[in-house]
Amino acid sequence: MIRPDAQLRSGHIPADLIPPGTDPRQVVIIHTAPRSWTGPVLLVLVATVGLCGLVYVTTVAVLSLVQVAATTAAAIKTAVPTLVGGGGLITLAIKTPKTDRARTKR
Image (tube, rainbow, N blue to C red; front, side):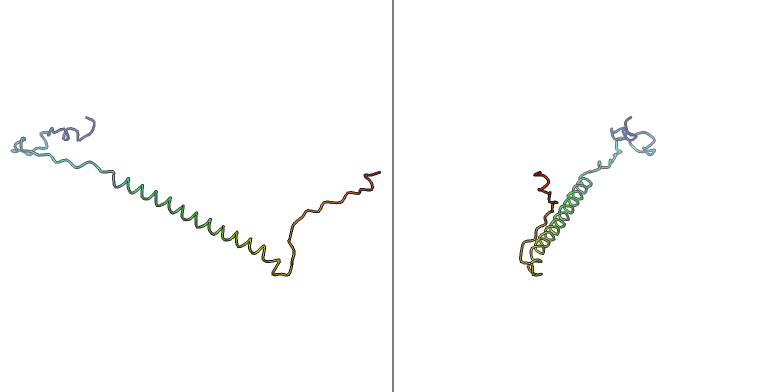
C-alpha cells in the first residue's frame, strides 16, 4: 500500500468499516476532492508581481528625485556667480610650479 487510504480509494471496503446488518453492495464511499493548487499559486504570482512593481515604482521615484536634485545643483552652480557679481567663467585649474628656465639653459 502506497497510501493508508489506498484500499478505500480503490473501492475495497474493509469489513470493520461496514456496520453489522448492512448490505456491502449498497455502501457508497465518498472521497474528498484533491487539493486545488490554483489559489495558492495565483496568490504567490500576484504577490511577486506586486512586489516587483513596488520596487520598480520606488526606484523610478528615487531616480527622479536624484535627477531633479542634480539639475537644480547644476542650475545653482551656473547662477551663483552671476548673482554674486562675478562676471566671468569660474574654472578650477591646478597650478604647477614654474621651472627655472635660466638654469636649464646653462
